[in-house]
Image (tube, rainbow, N blue to C red; front, side):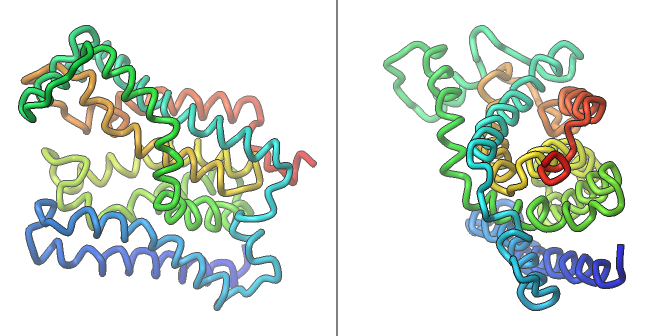
Length: 297
């Protein structure tokens, strides 16, 4: 890796992290996660990796094929990009959902897969009248996850344009495994402004929450990286990220009412939820599935 590449990575990281902290400052000096501006800040923060990547591409490196460098265009082969996009949506949803029975089997996720008591409790607290059985409502919620990925696509692309669109290919001269590990760690640490406020891990001390976030990002980021390298495009990774975000709250459908869910241990955020993505990544490595589209052509 050349000194110019290292400079570009340094600029990208500094801009992405700096903007994320800058946007989060009102929360730190205000009401934290309880702020009415939290959602706006969180969505705005998701754009910072894309901004960092665009700054590097347009003002630091200035390659001739800028959209290709970012993985935005061309979409070739179209069938492959579309196929990996659909696969990304499916895999993300399956990994998020699979974390729940795994956690239940290991005794860290208080599950209710029959009566959906926590979900029913939420509906009761909202005084919501449900004209259909609770099980049917859960099925509808799950069926809505794939199309929801397209609704979440733009904010997810704000992250993926940076992490897998630009950064991962830039790190590939170090080797596939180091590139996946480094990009995953950077992605995880980038979440620090919100994680240290209690986001995702409200009951854990900041250091533990951030460590757990980094662990999750390394494994899930490797799956997203696989989609990026195999398709030669950032779009499948962005769709997978969008589906992942949309499915993240589904653990509330299957939890037991009145029981606490420790996200450092349960759900896709906790260690028990990392087992499935770890197994998938091991299989992908063992079968040579991280070869890029250019290496296969």
